[in-house]
Length: 125
Length: 125
DNA sequence: CAACTGTATTAGTTCATTTAATACAGTTGT
DNA sequence: ACAACTGTATTAAATGAACTAATACAGTTG
Figure 1: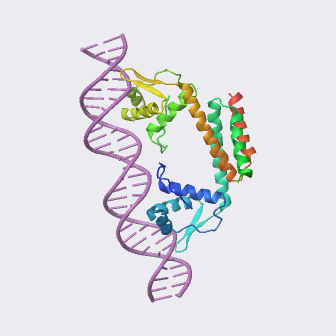
Figure 2: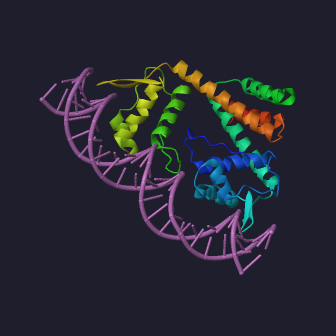
Figure 3: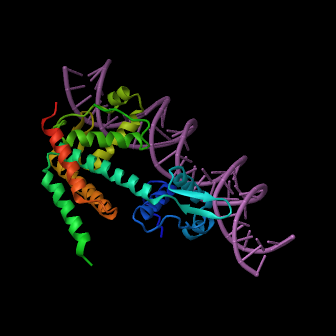
């Protein structure tokens, strides 16, 4: 479910936050479904429970999950999560286009890549 | 020429590297032109010379500049720099498209953003 | 020779991240 | 009631990256 990359310079708790965001945004984790407990996930990843909790606190701060003492942590409104992710993708697209423009690249080059990715996902496998 | 963002969590030396990459890739710094000296840029940015040198070492390691003891640091092959940047933009475009696809976004949405950016840069101002 | 350049080294500071060890509080099933 | 789970909080320590500081050496230039 979660794989840590220790070569990644970003902190572990941030990798965990991002991974859960992915799982929720793509629907792999449905609204209301329960996340692994702080302790069990810490065991599974061989890291300290505090680090997991930090990730969960951040996810809750952003409204992606809610936690209930004694019960567990659960996925909140997944529609909102998906919208938030989509906005971020738009921001990334803007940045990419701006940089391509600055480098004198043709827009067709970017659009070609998009076409390739979308056709890949459409029928391969 | 260079502006530091202390809110940015990335290290200063990395911001400097990236900024010079930009200046070289867009042609603002031409091939063979001289970079500010380690000490003068450190003064200008009110930081330690060691931090500038670290950025320059990294730029040299990547082949973007070359340094001559007693003379200074100079922009290397700017064509290679631009190519390298373009490849990176392509990688970013791939990532963005993949994520958009995973989120169920239409490719027209991405292409619309590209069109907007490219028409902005074409005639505004 | 003075005033610049890059380069190197050593030591210390600062800060975010992570671990560790507990403890408290609420839920659930037996 | 009790054991075994949940989340939450706290305090202390270890670790490592980034940055600063001070100094020195080496090469270039006018």
